[in-house]
Image (tube, rainbow, N blue to C red; front, side, top):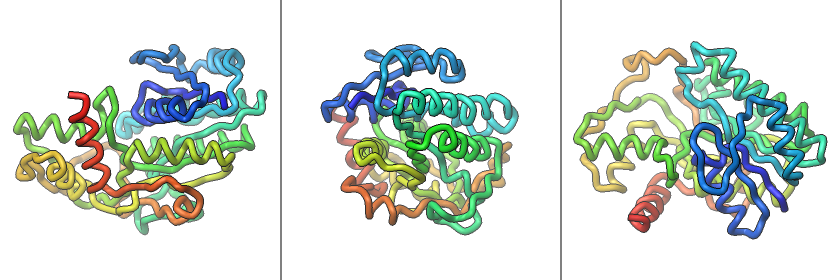
Length: 292
């Protein structure tokens, strides 16, 4: 199989590209802003460049984890959010369809309002922020443009990644510096290990799956409790972690509070084990220690 990973410099794209290569597939990755060895530069919002890239490589699958995920930034930059999360992936999905290639779009639990989670794939959507609307519209446009689209909904992705940006790395840096860490204790979610997300994505591609699927961790937990799990796994001072209300953080964009994703459908389809925080964080710790 030939696969093009748009956004291979990010944590999800990097994990997917690496796994595809290990499984013997022919893979090319792209980056935008921060290069990574073995990737080529691509601005996904340049539809002409994206179509040219797809035409040059002639992939069987185009995998697109690239997105604008800064939720509060999106709230005051609606046009930019829609361009990055809706229009650009739609153009990539259309270009893939012209060549008979499948397309993978990554979405989020934020498409739900967070009043009655955890949510299944068919539960009513009700996005509460610009970011959430851009991702929901991105889902729909990708499916419209390419009948071989997989929409993967996930959330709070963490794990080993070369940029060190995800929430676990942020907690590690602050705790090791002795800085206080304020984390919402009223946002329930399904933290997802990027290694497992990558494995599930590759398996879905190999199955030629089509449609919407939740791929997330199996444990619904509030973000404060997850931060304490990080401290336990990495032997950090949990006393630095303070649980606070979402309202007290005064964030511009609304967050879903009672959210999380059910994964019954994924479990019935996949061999990939989706691990909870305790087991996954231990695996992440071992992975980071192995490269010191």
